[in-house]
Amino acid sequence: MRLDEHCPAFSLRTTEGEYGFEPTQQTFKLIVFLPSPFSVSDTQDIMNIDGCSDFYAKNNIDVLLISQSSIHVNLGWIKAIQTVYGREVTTMIGEDPTAEVFKAYGVANAKAAVVVDKQARCRWHFSLDRRLTFNIEEIKRAMLALIEVSGSSSKTPEGWGPGDRTIKDIPLNRKSILRNRKWFYDLSPENK
Image (cartoon, rainbow, N blue to C red; front, side):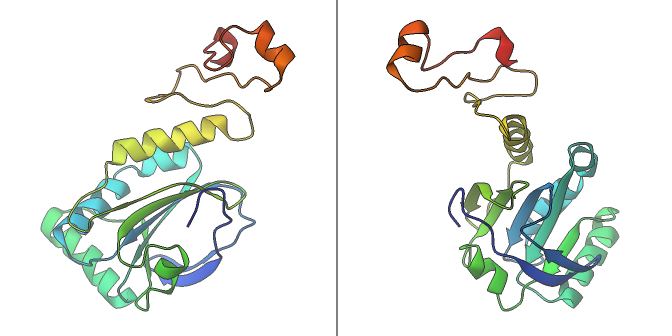
């Protein structure tokens, strides 16, 4: 999956029922690919991602976890998490035992996260070694930055956080550059 590409549609069974991803849906989405059911790192990721459900609801973000296991294994997995950790997982976990969706998104052999915008385009993605866990705070920060600049030509500087100023985008032509001394990095107050 490359940035700005339209994400492929798919449908699958999840722990919350049938789910269909269509390019016409109008919300940001976080799709997380978990290749190792019942592993320590993927189990930790499920609990960390599921623990942010208020954040996703507040920011109108749909979340889908996809594992390379069957619906039966996924249901057993969330039952084991509840039994061992006392945590009820309500985030959808979809089944992809043949790895068709993994392959369609180019993450067949990795743990990965993909952020999809309202037009179903890939806006951010990264892969990790299967033994590592996601930095959920960085995922949340990146999603808020993408939401902030969606529909505008502004950009966010490195480390941007909610309430920080964005970078003003100036038309790249001689007249506009000569008028604005900070044309390449303008953090002006009106861009807050």
